[in-house]
Image 1 (spheres, rainbow, N blue to C red):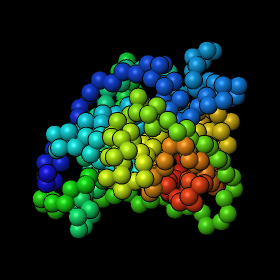
Image 2: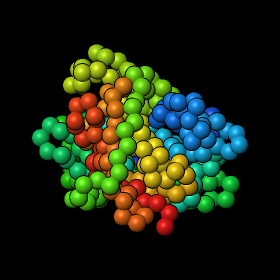
Image 3: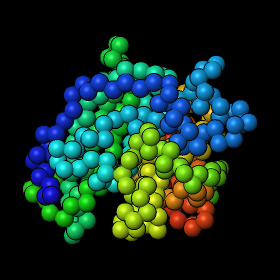
Length: 284
């Protein structure tokens, strides 16, 4: 299906209601590996509601509608995530009713038969008082080889990592069934569950969802720098540059400069970078 850039400019969602519960928060936390060791008390606050439930900051990335571009012929089954830029205006509550707005702010041809890159900007507000909760800019790679009209808008420049040796590093193992668990929160594309579909897409086997990998990196920063205090995270930006297979080990290298944590994640078993240009801003 060809891409009509003029049509993309008109695509928008206004005040769509979104509701999530403590169950959704805990299921997401399990999906990014919290609670893997049920005796690790530092992580239990993310997977049980007593005494209080901690909310993983990247949980925000699964609260926005995956069907935003459905009228253009794409949904969660047909796109790849290129990057995300998450800004949190306040810590996520354990349960909430939201109002969500989304629009396309940029789109351009990647050249050849590589399709288009589309930047979607969304904002979520609390329904009870209209207070802004978070915003998320997502770059989506749409695999189409024919485009109509010139592109529009500008893509944000990626964060530049420091040139020195990382200050800190964290290894987190993923589960072999991680993609099956995470799909209960988001990312139900067959490439994450069907071996034949994954092979046809060029992978050895089903791959982890990009948003799951970002959640693992967020967990690494919470564990290594934040002492699991999720209220410290103010923003979380990253580029997705490679695939992670369920069961592999994610190594997240971190550089800390005051309240800014730069990071990059790679797969230990294969030595390939999968997340790059990461930037996590903490409360000053």
